[in-house]
Length: 69
Image 1 (tube, helix red, strand yellow):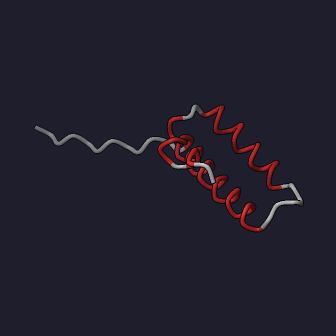
Image 2 (spheres, rainbow, N blue to C red):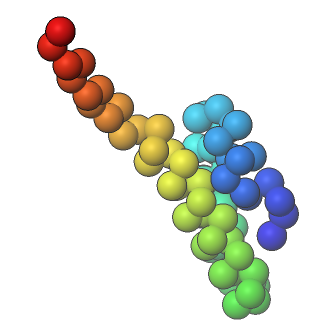
């Protein structure tokens, strides 16, 4: 699969681009002519995109309380 699907590149894309990429990957998986290796690569790419999107949608981690003076 193309290097575009590494986490560093995916984190640099805006959310709307990731959502578009996710939809494109889902549509590609519906192609009956895919070989098993291609299907596996598309599944891996889709999982990477969805992972980045989940991290962006997760609420921020709570900040630790500052110690009292």
